[in-house]
Figure 1: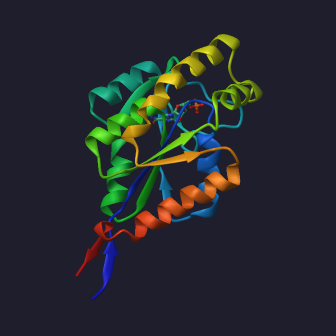
Figure 2 (figure 1 turned 90 degrees about the vertical axis):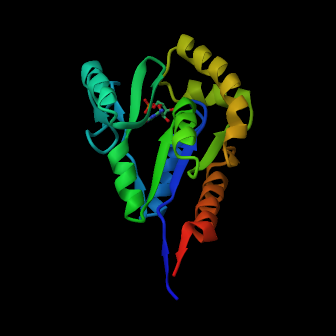
Length: 197
Ligand code: 5GP
């Protein structure tokens, strides 16, 4: 008897400012066998961001054309910019038996839940709203208005937790990371993800 495993789609999602990006980067540095999807966005590159590594940067017209061609597994408008997950990268890797990680917003995760319910949905939550506000302020990336908008949205977003499989509270980064790693390891051992011959 020998075993092969199906590729598993892991989705990390949660409110803006909760630390999803930091967790994803920390995770990838420890799990070289995880493929990470690079999203397409209409947002302008920030200092140090590299085309094809952090995002594929496109204009609105290009994004809309890709959407019309059904090239996105999911796409959403997140605070004035559009973001989408390229479908072919995800499907190709899963078919080859490779695990894929998406780090996307909650609207996008709900779309993926609809089309690929067998994915593993991990909700990253802040320990409380005060901490989320202080993280949004300290990353210095958003205007005061935008911070208010993100905090108001996150109140509603937290209500979507029930659509997810796991909840990880990102209070202390190393602890949250250990929890995500444990979820990944456990899902990889799940019999329904293994082909028995
Ligand atoms: P940022 O512009 O700060 O890199 O990302 C803004 C937000 O967009 C974050 O919450 C991030 O998770 C989300 N995001 C990044 N890529 C995608 C994507 O492909 N789809 C969706 N729905 N959200 C994304």
